[in-house]
Image (cartoon, rainbow, N blue to C red):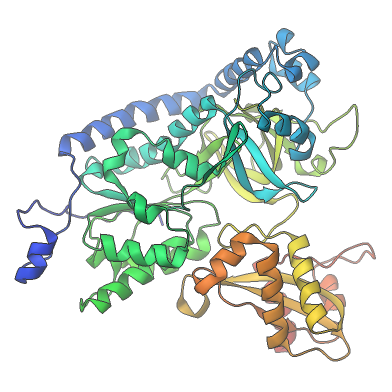
Length: 547
């Protein structure tokens, strides 16, 4: 997955791509407008930054404490800062003793006031941007998270870091000789009173450094297309003959893009069997958002050669926290010096934030233990303090600090970043039952990735009924209707089957739920059948049907 095949960059030619095609001459790739010196300069800058990053990893306590002090000093005269005595805080121990951990709902009143234009609440300045996160709060409302100007600056740095680490690890000096193709949603920015509501990818796209724009694809008219399927079609038609050297986006979309590129080439009468024949200098995929492993075999098949996947762990609450370091080890390397202070609560203590006057003990980044499961909390320049993301992480190494995403505290199902919750699955099943009545013993939902040899996914719903099961094809269609109503991203990615195929519904044999709970070791009467199923449990349930 992290092997970069050696390729020769396309040589410079005088003919344009259209002239070459018209004359029947050799295929020509459109090059970037930059001279090779730009790529060499970028590589030199990357080496300096990576050296600074490596030093920060050897001085975690110093670097992270400096970050925390900066945030506390900046906010000492805010409502939140006065309440918790920020003016007197000098050490992490003082901070942890005074400031409670919180989640979105505990901050929501402050966020709403900031969205109304108030200042001096969590940070002294006015925050102009609020990111509409794909998650939801514990009260079921959408999340609107503050993104301050200082956070934007830090995020631009951490986004560069993921690329810089790759450039240095692979000794790449010609990155800007070609283009980076981004697979991102359209830029959304709507005015809401005194502030703007947006998404973090949209904001980063708008605030992209000017020098990167000439080598970024697609162009605005295509980037703003909201229909994913149509957008990908336009991308492959427009940029088939461009020297694409990197593709950035959510990992699950890479193979779908490659399928469309090969299909477009076939329509033009080109006899190619892999993407590498069209984009010979494509060497790196900048991904993230979903677990990468299920998609890698399909990506490699479509690409036709080995590649480097730069994986990232990121959130609207602060940007990119960790990224691939290309040393062949599990996990992603933490970025400790880009404007986020990290804390971690052991998972066994992380579930309850309701005890007034007390809160779970947490440890700073320099105090974590290897292979222990933690709930991650962050403090940011936008006014989040010991804020619970809801993610579970595990450190695969503490020298240097390398971590991996391990799941969600609440659990969710996500193949294309739709982040489906158990409540949404429950409501979709209820919708199906309203159309095709029956009595369920219990049910759970998993997902298949790479269905029918494609890069697409589908939901698989397992249901045990009391008595006769309904027509399961019709039940699956009704479940699909319910999911479309409940989850916006699911609906968008189901339209035209651009990323998610129609779900499958499977009726379990009588007694399956009881058998399943026994097989997974849950014998308590209080144990619940899981609404969201991982691959192992999905396979176990399929075995009951097969037998």
